[in-house]
Image (cartoon, rainbow, N blue to C red; front, top):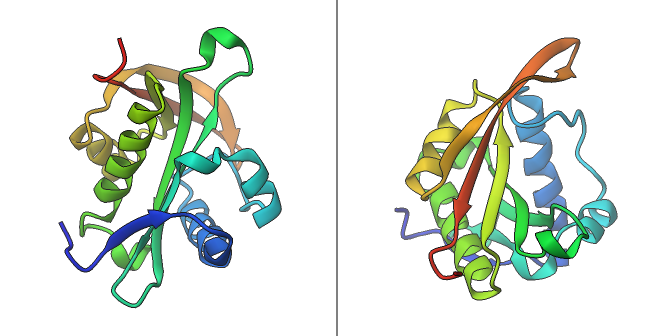
Length: 166
């Protein structure tokens, strides 16, 4: 772990860097089906406020973020969220992603959320390895789930069940 990085609640003053890091991830072509980052207003209105965090370096500069959205408004899925985690390319490989996931999982466990899930392109091996280190398991692969830049893409479904919620 990187002792010079700390995790904090995501706040409006982090907006510019959060959106910038999101776009950097999008630009890799292996992070999401999205082709451009949302505006801060769109991001802010769709993510659960109590389950979004930033990683800050020793100067307070945002080097990563994580956030969650509900998967459905149906009451049967009240304890299921889908998450994202993005780390600035210059901060990758230093434990930032794991710190962010640990903060997210601590908050979701405390809130009674029993499943945190996501979909990851199989080419994003670093993300898959990170999630497995954080306690996620692979559920399966959805083949040819969608087109991305004209190419069919598979998506690996991952989830983490809370040990705190029975």
